[in-house]
Length: 111
Image 1 (cartoon, helix red, strand yellow):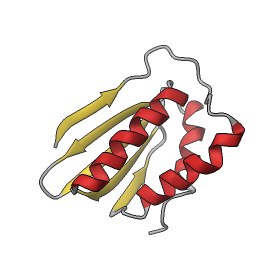
Image 2: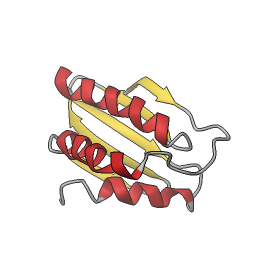
Image 3: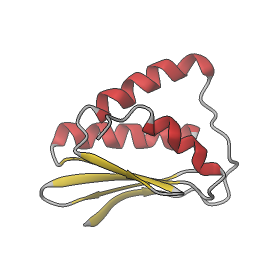
């Protein structure tokens, strides 16, 4: 897989800055993207979500990477793709900070 897009957390504060009133809309946007999920894996510090490699899904991943990078600067977002699928990798800087990944997992379809 080739890296297409990466945003790195560096030394960012570990805090989501998304306002409470904005969270329902963001959850809806994420759930809309996750409806296309082919599968996903969760480790101690990361979440890998796989999608079909189609333009509409890729655009949604790009948009949500930018939005999530703005409010959760402590996370690293990376998009990988090959001819068949696109993988969105979200990585936390520590196990303690990885608790925020559970919010993404809660929106994902169950295997």
